Length: 136
Image (cartoon, rainbow, N blue to C red; front, top):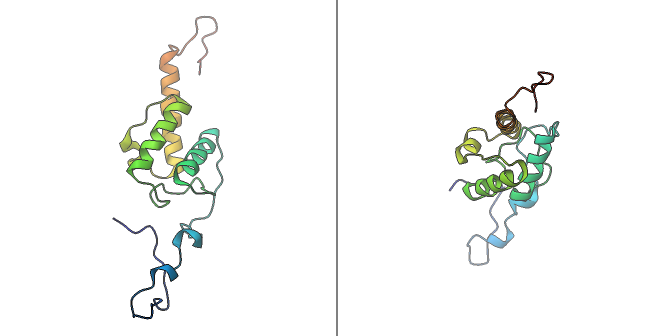
């Protein structure tokens, strides 16, 4: 278990009995704690689709292309949800480990684009007989 957020406090709120008053502690989810990175909006259709999927699965808004899946609160269960959504939307199979290796959204988007391109070029035999153009 790794904490999702660290919040600095001048002092801990205490109950009349001298114990930590957990109800008075600030809610880190409502503090709008960012990753410290500048927000970069999605530039491609794949990035826009991934932002939409990540926002839906993680329950967060304003995800940019330089955001890290795990820094946003992603875990193994949310990886499985993303794999299912990608299978339904892009008709591609994404390995669980690929999200571990490419946790930043724009890197993962490039991986998906390459995989999608390879799948489509392999399915169409790559060249037409009429005009010898690539079919994508």
